[in-house]
Amino acid sequence: MNASILVVEDDPSLRRIMQLRMDHNGFKVHCAESGEAGLAALDREPFDLVLTDLMLPGLSGIDVLKHIKTQFPSTTVIVLTAFGTVETAVEAMKAGAFDYLTKPVDNEELLLAVNRALETARLREEVGNLRMSVSRKFGFENILGHSPKLLYVLDVAARAAQSDATVLIHGETGTGKELLAKAIHFNSPRAGKPFVAINCGAIPRELLESELFGHVKGSFTGAIAHKKGRIEMAHGGTLFLDEIGEMPPELQVKLLRVIQEREIDKIGSNVPMKIDVRIVAATHRNLMNMIEDGAFREDLYYRLAVIPLDLPALRERSQDIPTLVDFFFSRAREKNGRPDLQLAPTLMPYFAGYRWPGNIRELENIMERITVLAEGPEIRLQDLPASLTAIVPQANAMQVDMPESGISLEGVEKELIRRALEKHDWNQSQAARYLDISRKTLIYRMEKHGLGQPIVDTMVR
Image (cartoon, rainbow, N blue to C red; front, side, top):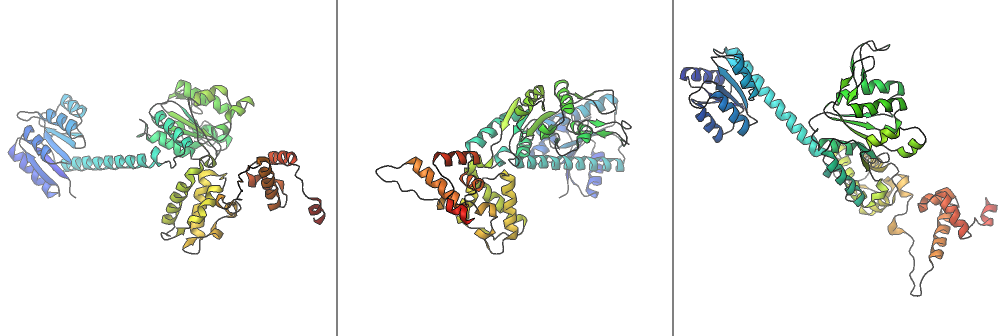
């Protein structure tokens, strides 16, 4: 659709010439002879661009410009005048004009300015739409789940997003720490600025400093040009330091200075650079234990953990598993062109009963794998990986009679342990995993109940 342009000009002949020029180049043009008439036209219909003279009867071009910027902020304005001075140009630009042209305006110069203004407006709209799309994608509501532990974390994170306080996210691998960090950024006042992530454990120790802080040309062998570090790239936005527990002690000192002084020292430079970043860090490690071992600085920990967030493991929010299974299955079907593939409801207990050591990432990968490899129109039990089918779903678990006279809890526990050991040929490690307890706990309870491997079984082996 052709752009619509409003020409506000009190000179009839010039107004007619500009209209013909714009018409000839495919624009939809409307003309107004005064500022009042121009604003009335804007009230009736929207325009992509306004060309207005500064010297108008009644309302001046500056008044028209200011009104447009207040009432129609998405409309781009170019001002024209026969009395061009530095002062008027500065006033027009301060009031929000995109460009300033002096009469008589050359035809090519005018068309160039118009096309440039429209292209800039188009790009600005695209960026706005992209930001809105990204904001929706990384909204807190898009982190799936309704378990109390998760909802508590999301509530704290949503409130933390509005501040500039540093955030430390703790969680096992695959729990969605980076997704939460992005949600914090894209729901903060810094959403329009960069979100820059770096995994401190994925970059060789000797390269990490350069990646974080940057370097100047010639600062070391191989430094053939100036390089921006990730901190500088994140200026005005958010720096996400994933796996902060892997950061070497000598860089922990420098990061502490970034937080305290808001400046960085590039490698090879003697001049500190002021920086404005919000830091969100994440780790799967126990930093307090690392502090006790001397592997992590206590002062840095407390600088990072102004707002600590502890993402629960998937096994701690089992009620969310069906929702996540449905979501990742639907996405996998769409991605792999299998919209009609079905997942039998009878399989859900296998997903619910699994421990998910790899958390949400493992669940996502499994859903894609079974979607790709399934041969029939429906996911069957044999399509599931062995890790899931090794667990007996709760629906098929051992039934316990509840007699009126009462029941011995000790007896039930002893029988359950005995059956688990028999199921796994008295392999204690496998039986412990099956019962979701540690091997040490299993051995303690075996001794407590006097359970030992039958001698006859040993002799057979």
